[in-house]
Amino acid sequence: MQTATRIENLPPYLFVGITKQIAEKRAQGEDVISLAIGDPDLPTPSHILDRLCEAARDPANHHYPETDGLPELRQGIAGWYQRRFRIALDSDKEVLPLIGAKEGIGHMTFCFVDPGDIALVPDPAYPVYSKSTILAGGEPYYLPLTGENNFLPDLENIPPDVADKAKILWLNYPNNPTGAVADLDFFERVVDFAKKHDVAVCHDAAYTEVVFDGYRPVSFLEVPDAKDIGVEFHSLSKTYNMTGWRIGMAVGNEEMINALMRMKSNLDSGIPQAIQHAAIEALNGSQDCIAENNSIYQRRRDKVIQTLNRIGMQAVPPKAGLYIWAGVPEGYTASDFAARLIDEIGVVVTPGTGYGNSGEGYIRISLTTPDDRLEEGLDRIERWYNSLQEGS
Image 1 (cartoon, rainbow, N blue to C red):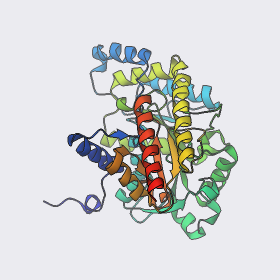
Image 2 (cartoon, one colour):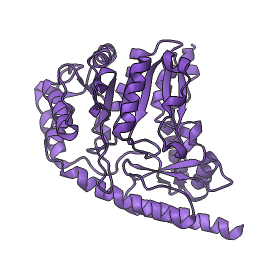
Image 3 (tube, one colour):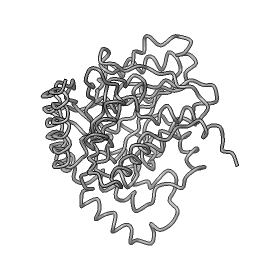
């Protein structure tokens, strides 16, 4: 048999390879510390789990769910957006629950990109933006994110013919992997650009609640008229430590939400209803867990930055998100440096090039490793790097 060309040409997902590498090292008896994957080590809050367990025992939740989710969940999402961002959403037309934001992001591309179409994709970026474009037969046009432009895409430098042909623009702030943030002035320019060139905007806002030093991110949809041309993806994964339960949402433009719902209704059967009830509890219940989580992540952030500063690696403390975007030492590529860390000291980081060519020169360090393992990993990096300096 022969698989489709789209699969033949598709490389494995970035973290599949990293996870396999970790497993191989551990199978050899090595003590491997992963600072690579952004999967919170902190547990789902107990009040959310209690609601999940209660709902799981209710036979009413043992059947096929609806693609567009329970009305109470859509209302819960709309209420959360109103409280958090002062954005009014029609829960029947402008809200769609997802089996995790990743699923919705991947499916949304197929709603707008035909073979030969262009998608505007940041570089570096979450790989799903570009990979879903390729699977849909489209062509990613990469927008370099660099320190010089504060890791924001330079929309004015997109060639007019490319901008006019583009069907969709992907954005992600607070940003993975760079940790950069965007303000309303930037999003206002995005709306103007999208209206001028008739481009659909998809903003991935999964990290707006993981914040430090009193920073409070904005939503793309806070810009007047943003709903005319775009949607925002969000997730309960990082906010409430619910990565394993797979639940997120898309909100915004009614036409785009309807297109995504029609795509999903033909490909999946919706979110298990017990998980939906857990999400309702997360959105409407106590929010104390968010500040508690963030205090832990901020302490870890500070430890990572302190270690990197001591050994001379350049990294700006992020205002939000779960990652440190650190420049590799002179003389190394991102892949070479990451390879040496796992091979020589058993510490796994993600090379910046895993997120695109503009990630060269950087590694990404995740803050989702338990404190004792994080400290051990940082100690290994510092001792190893200092030994290299002494030997040179």
